[in-house]
Length: 259
Ligand SMILES: [Zn+2]
Image 1 (cartoon, rainbow, N blue to C red):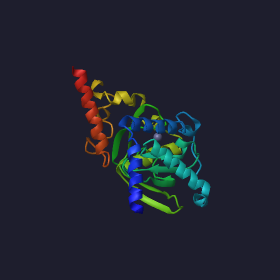
Image 2: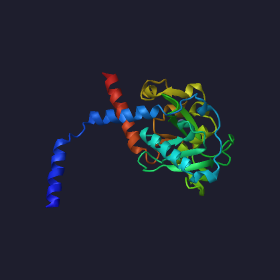
Image 3: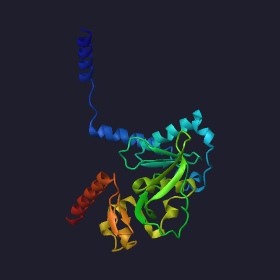
């Protein structure tokens, strides 16, 4: 009887509830993103241009630290970011959050991350090139060349020491955020001013002059790596869906332009 009463009540509630339309869901998501954007530091805000302070590892278990980590991961999730760092959320702290792809449920947290030899610009390590964008750099997409694999040392969110060899998007995201910790963005790490383009320009690469701004940057689309070892483009693991979405919108635009 109790179950029956519950069933009747649930059925009545369900009948009254109107499922949101796709338009309403998209609008609600955009509203969440818009509110979250208000909390992000945008270049050249001072958070984006000065190095952070290392964290005292004893503070990692403090309620304030845990609260701020939760606050920033929520912000990164609301913005659909695959990586985030303290400075982007106006927090002057050496903390980085990374995912290997947008479908990974939780962020990997790095406290005081360091990559030995990262600033060695004469390194002969295998490199990938990629058009990167950043929630703190507006519509800019910049061509950035980074090592394919790195070894990172630091601490997790419980203050436990960790060391990990990272490849693919995890390595790329970690290095992108590590740059923020030293007050740098993709605008400082890119090859030159002509290697910074807008998101709209990225979707219209078919209109670019041949080999602009370089042969490898020209042939590399969004969500792709250019492998400087094999001289070919590859889609990083986990980004296959996003890459396919991008190419389908590109061919749609091509079709319209051809008419
Ligand atoms: Zn960034």
